[in-house]
Amino acid sequence: MFNGICGVLYRELLIYRNRALKQMLTSSLSPLLFLIAFGWGFGRDVTVGGISYISFLIPGLITMNSLTQSFAISGEINISRFYFHTFDEYLIAPVSHAGIVIGEAAFGVFRGILATFIIFIYAFVFDASLSFNPFFLVAIVLHTFIFSALAVTTSMVVKDHSGQALINNFAITPMIFLCGTFYPIDKLPYAFKLLVSVFPLTYSTKVIRATLTGAEVNIVYVALMMFYCIIFFLTSLWALRKVEA
Amino acid sequence: MNDNSDVLKAAGLRKNYRKDKAAVDGVSFAFSRGEFVGLLGPNGAGKTTTIKMLTGLIKPSSGVIHYYGRDFHNESQMTKGLIGVVPQQNNLDRDLTAYENLCLHAILYGIPKDARRERIYEYLEFSGLTDYANRQVKTFSGGTMRRLVILRALLHEPKILFLDEPTVGLDPHIRRIIWDFIIKINRTKNTTILLTTHYIEEAERLCKRVMIINDGRIIVDGDPETLKDGIGHFVLEVYKDDKIEEEFFNTRDEALLALKDSTYPCKVRAVTLEDVFLGLAGRRINV
Image (cartoon, rainbow over all chains, first blue to last red; front, side, top):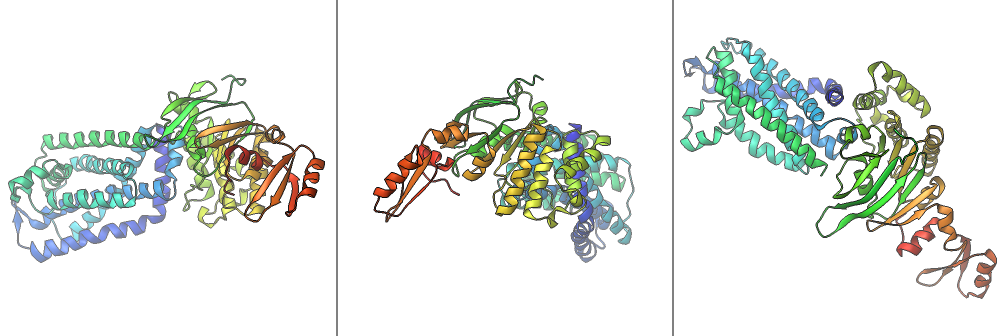
């Protein structure tokens, strides 16, 4: 298993090294636009649950941006599966499926965490008042692992690149807009509340926001995040086995 | 590990992509150490599916595969280390250097860290690619990429090497360089080789044994000379208005005699492996 994790990480990090600047720039633009539009344009004097809207929004953008970056590994896995066939190198090597999944997911976690740094810089520039609970570090690893493992699963299930785009449109985008990243979900109609209660992003947003705004971390939500980690890790293994069927 | 046992033994391999049609329909064979085998057949005959099953990229619908007597399915991690695979596409990471591509392979196959560098340079030297070590793969020519893919498959010193259409798309000069390289591997390392091709000439030049697969079944298995002897030594090609007809003869004189009697343009030539295939499968292989 260890050879698989090391091999996958070695490759992904070497490739990332060449593209790091481009990807950092890409991931820095959309949160900035959200901050300008929602933070300045609309929420300057608004408070949410006793804190300023900017301070409410920043943790939401951290979850959004890290999710986007972690989940983006699915696109790269697709390219290596369908276009360059480099993924076959992993499949024929004497490494376990778990090693491949953990290697890819670890890279997704790495990318997701890098994407949070830029938001912390914005938080400083936009003068958001944040408090920092060290539990944030645990929460961000769980959060990025959930979406990296989900990315591995979907990239194994889809048959081509357009299938991946479909999943991005119908699963990831709604999640980003509905799960409390930009506004508290208790403002949603009941039906939508039910809907978002099955999305993992709802819980990671709550936990991450709590660690950055000085609120108490609900241990049930943390347990749910761990639950999603395990579920998506298992679906990744299942999907990878199906590739060889 | 017993060196006398078969390197590879496959029994009753079958793959159904759809319910009603088998892509590979129950093939069986065994290879011993150092054998050089060609798997021939037209496009869509089941060559690549067979290789994919033997290398673990797809699971057979039924049948068993053993490497040195070990079950490939149950002991896949152990047995995967015994095989080297050269796929049809040059699946290298184009943004990485040759050395980095090889280092990735070395990690995946568990070559210890302190031995990696030495092993990689030993094999770069063996393949004549030492000068390319630190250049990005995307700058390589097709022939150089191909050599690197073959070298990568050798890095963990496999007992058996699978080459899926190794020279497809290469010019005649580069093709001969690749042939020499493959022969060198077989001779100097005593590596068992299974090569698929639809170039008959390639199999005839390289392989000591050929298996012809058609419609998912192996219809012939033997050494090229014996197979050719089976249909005669000389062919008379008769160029009729709408097709070329072939007649087979045991001696050149018999063929020439028939030529004299013919009113059409004719040509006498030696029998090739392609004639064997045509006689068996009744259709022309795509060349």
